[in-house]
Length: 193
Image (cartoon, rainbow, N blue to C red; front, top):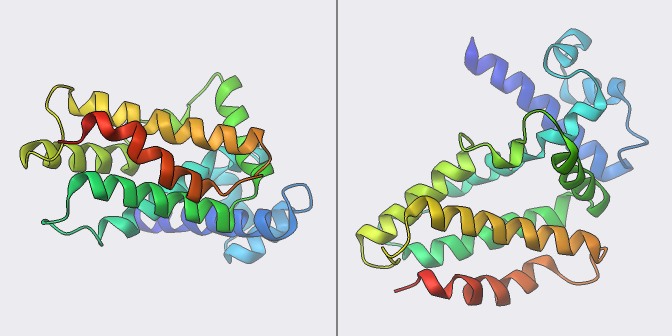
């Protein structure tokens, strides 16, 4: 039952973000999302109060990407390099399939929301995977033990959010992926052994 409900919610989220990217947020209707997701109106409103509620669901797509990437990580892979790879893959996905205006809306909703801040939810796949990578890297002597794993994960997440925020502020005038390829290793140099 839980798997089915997760699949239904995921179908709605994936369909919504696909349509938002293709035709814009304002030009996408709830009916189109329901049709694209092959679900029902009842299912849609079971998970979401309306279209605006979907803005907070972008973290779900990010976590879906991390679930996919988790399968590509080998035990012998250098943990520092894996962190850089995950960042590159996420930012490439953002550039390829999420409009700047939608990412801007997500970031702004997280600033003003009084409820759940999805991007900061420590139960997300994102945070769990990052902590696992950092902890493994510390155990293998690839990442410093001078900082706690949670502190390193927080720093990494902060760097990603700040780069996304700046990219939105600059209206995408540069490649987020290319810029991160230069900056992330430099910013994270402190944790590398």
